[in-house]
Length: 266
Image 1 (cartoon, one colour):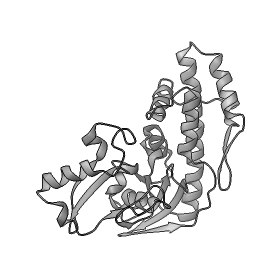
Image 2: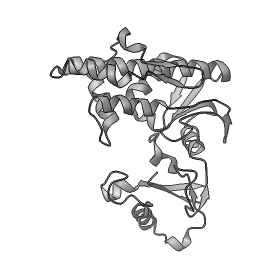
Image 3: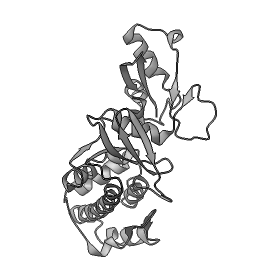
Image 4: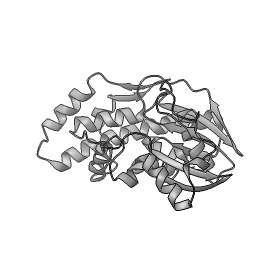
């Protein structure tokens, strides 16, 4: 995920994302291994590359070639970051990420993180949110954040006419084939009306939040945990984190400092 965590024995001594050194977003400019981040951490700790005894990677693409180290499953890495950096001794763990399988469920107990069989096919919450952002014309690396910011202008809006576009089925998110067409038509009518566009954005974000809570109800019912850890890039969205926290489905909710790919270096 473009980040390095350096450990000395069982002690974490530093974490750094490549883009914090290069000042370029991941995928722009220096998009290879986070060598600049590693060099910085080694320099700060007075160590040398030759002293590195073990390397562990969590590749985005499990079919990728030799990444130069031991491998850990990408979603498992997210689950470990979410739970093992939390203050909880036990918790349910939900990962919502762009990488397959998009949605995964885990349990944490002590120092163990265990996968829970949870069927999921098709797009995840992150994919759908990015599709929504694209309809609004947001296609940059910060597209999701721009849509969230627009929705924040009129928070908590609901629109029954849009709800049928998205729903939660047994093992997937149902996305209407007319999703983009319907939203584009609504936006065309409000091309120069910022607040009307904001209400549409807010209503769609609210709907996706409702479906996330539906999924969490199922997880809580099956696992019975009172605490929840969240991980994966979808939980960069503070609006979604707030919905989960205030819903009261769990007594305590934890989101790691960086729930996305660079956070899994920890």
